[in-house]
Length: 506
Ligand code: GLC
Image 1 (cartoon, rainbow, N blue to C red):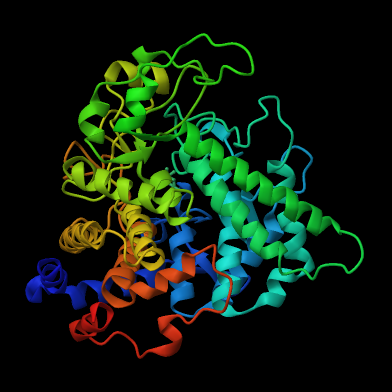
Image 2: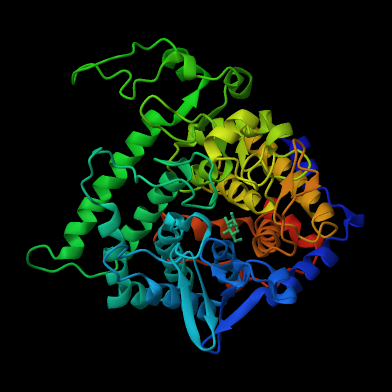
């Protein structure tokens, strides 16, 4: 224990931390843009602002603004967040083909707000994750600001119901997962992630929890049940079913592998349910043996009849842990797996988006040779600095919820995260806060990477906030907590140097 603490306390006097953080803060301010004369969120890259590019990176993307809004809430900038939430709500689609869908991105052009629901994007697919993030952001705004009246207000409640209409529906497959096309989330170019990709399902779990929290703000009717109360019941049981489903079909360890490989196949009938998806043992890849080692575990990328996707997706796993989809021991098994596979997942630029990448033949067949997703690049095994903060938040949340469980492992995981933080601090300013990095070690700046990418900048600032400044602020992301929240911005003076580090480990 003493050893771990001394490693964690280590400061790096020559790292230029203050200078880098100050520069990142200044850049972040420049990413903010106004809509209707009031700051409303960040463009996707500063490059687009500076060079007036024709790509859509100058728009306000909902998903890219997730870390932005979390950061603004930590700073107590509630009005800005509320304006963003209101604009998204106003733009929630009412058209009969995609009623309830929130836009992927929007922009103000000559006084008009133009929103993209997929009709302007490559592949013309709408972003499921954008819609699912909105209730999460709305709920954490309500909790951080104390503005419960907003959460209970008519427009917010109506927005929630419209979104739930899209999710809580009977379907032909009768499962609690959301069935989506390829390219419908952060991975928005072909990657064979259609069906029930982990990232969407883990986020759905957090999103439904947030919807419940928001619906709970509406006072119950003394007599009989109103629509909100009926929906609340249904949503709660949906969440339970979803969790059971995901833990049963997506969670794997070396122990479960021993069972999965020896299951019978071709099973019919209700009582024969060892292998509902008829997975043949031959599709289980050999790399899993070394990857899982003895005590690691993770959620696989997708489950489809006969075709599980065993790739490891960083964001889906971090969210599964952060939102409490995984049990405490499962969360620790995930951290063990990440430490064990650090040379792959972190390498020179934490953190890889998915592992392993599709090799050439598979990439040709399954992506249609998507140019940006060639092996070891972009979504196909690329390294995205913006993906590290959700893992850091998951680890800190674990510590918050299970303070006395396996402190050694959690300490080791924190130490690893701190080292990754220093790697980013050292590299990102030199590489102009690039969007992503390529190759097995993630050393090369992504072949088509934008520079001064907002979520790279703000992701780093969040890491700095959570790891170096106020780890207790991770409570903002605790979707199971209800009561009022005391964020560090409200109760402490601003960060004033490395000496502040002592208080959180004291
Ligand atoms: C790319 C990414 C997507 C992101 C967008 C804006 O299309 O794949 O996830 O939202 O850029 O940064």
